[in-house]
Structures are given as C-alpha cells and as structure tokens.
Amino acid sequence: MGIALLSRDIWCDVAFSHPEIPTRLKDAHRAHGNNARNIVCVVIDILRATTNIAMILENGCSAIYPCASPEMALELAQILRQRHGAEKIFLGGEQDGKPIEGFDGGNSPLEYTRRRISGKSLILSTSNGTKTLSAVKSCGEIFTAAFVNITATAERVASILLANPNQSLLIACSGREGTYCEEDAVGAGILLDILQKNLEKLEFSDTARAALRIAHGAEENLGKMLFHSWWGRHLSSLGLDEDISFCARKDITNTVPRLEDGIIKST
Image (cartoon, rainbow, N blue to C red; front, side, top):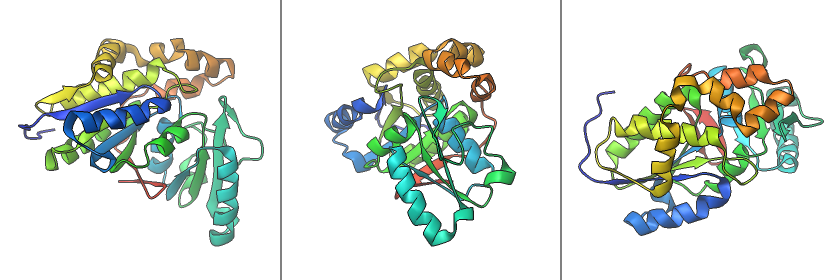
C-alpha cells in the first residue's frame, strides 16, 4: 500500500458485540482522551449484513438506509416511497436469518443484482448488523467491512489515521444476539493484521489482541470457518449454503461503504 509510518501510538479496540460498544467508547477516552467524534469505526457482520451492503453498493445501489428494527424500516419506507416513488425504494432484511414478511427482499448478497437494485435505494433491517450501525452512530467516521472488501477498507482506514493520528480505531463486531461470534472476530483480526503491516505503533486493547490471535490461521480456509460457526450452521439449515460460500470470498470488491447522517453510500 505504500503508506508512510506513523510516530504516534494509535489506540485500536474491538467490540465483539453491539452491547459492548459504550464500554469501548469509554476506553478510547481513557486511553487517549478521544471522544466518539475522534473515533474511526468499522462495523463487521460477515454473515451477512456487511457482505450484503458492500455488494449492494457494488451493484449500483444509490443509498442504503440501515434501520435497527423492522418497524422502523417499514415506517421509513412509507416516507421515502411517498417522497421518491415506490419503484425507487426497496425494503429488505431478515430476522433470525429469514426474510421478513411483507419486505421486498431478504439479506442475501446474491439477490440484489445490478439489474434489480442499480439506481435505487434500499432500506435494510437485520438481526445484528443494523443494530450495531445504530450503536456506533456517534463516531466520527463509520465504515462497514466484510471479507469481500476487507483490504480496501483497511487501506481507507489507514489513510484516515495517517492524516489524523490523534484519532482512535474501534472495530465493532455485530456478533449474534448481543454475544460473541467467531466470524466477525476473525474479520476484525484480519483487518487489524493489514493495518499493523502498514502503520507503526498501533496500541492494541485486550480484545484487539484476541481478535488477531483468533484470525491467525483462519484466513487459510475462511469457508470452512464460516460453515463451522454457529450462525453459519444456522444459515445452512435454512438452505443458504451459497450465501455462506459467497461471504467467504476475500477482496472481490474495492467498495468501501460509509455511513453518514444515517445513510450508507459507496466512497
């Protein structure tokens, strides 16, 4: 990547689930005095929200509106359809891995093709990923990452930290129902590994060091790891093996989704 080395330690932390995020924001303040606006945040939900978000934008979607609940998504859909026309607004999401009744689509990275989504906006509500995006909305810069765009996202974050080394980094894993999940921790570890190869003097929290260790070796067979994970087994039981295999693909897009003012767009 060719990024110059930094001379100041940069605090790097990982939240393994969205309920941990308030504690991680406090830790950033304790470590370097950073408030939320001084924190660059990367949200990860490998199976499947952030994989889906990257591919939806790659396929030409104009904007994604993440909603923490299906009820919020339905309310927003009604407002935006009245404003822009029903044909321009898609409503997608899942609960417990299953499409939501009455929505236009689910949470599969395979269903939002360029022909279906290009030039349109998507309102998205998922079990874990969109809740996590809501939890980090006070952070200064917010991106989403999955295996499909992990290197591009790491390079974007590195460039921001290089330009302003007084910021901290928080990787917010979506987890599963408020608890830890392996695949998001592996994603966090891979992202941190890329960063430490390009930026000097990163200071890691306990959870950041744990994520690096968890990711060690997993990159050799991401598909196997996903299929063996708890949520992977659940999705497989729903007949979604193709989705799982797709989510294991690494660096197939350079799209870096960014959340600003409640809207995710490609940068």
